[in-house]
Image 1 (cartoon, rainbow, N blue to C red):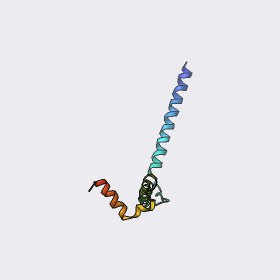
Image 2 (cartoon, one colour):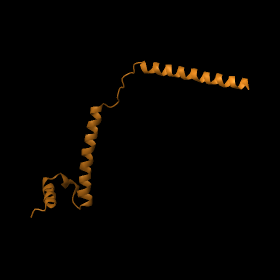
Image 3 (cartoon, rainbow, N blue to C red):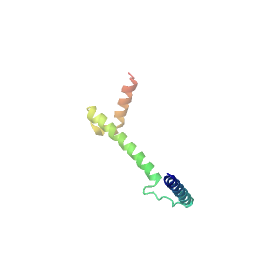
Image 4 (cartoon, helix red, strand yellow):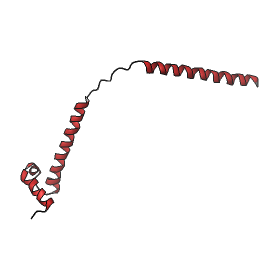
Length: 94
């Protein structure tokens, strides 16, 4: 029985030593200076791409909505008279 107890103590001591070494190596890694991350696409370009995609989806949605669903010509979306007509329908000015 004593031998088993001694083995358990040795293994627990060994585990504690390994944990202490792991903690030390983690602290050493944290203290090292990290390299600055070089982005493939800069943030300003990402924002610009998102804005352009939003505008493109708005135009495509208006063309599909007016041309395909609404029995009009998709190119009529870009005419001012179409938007005046739509705003008159929405406001119901008679």
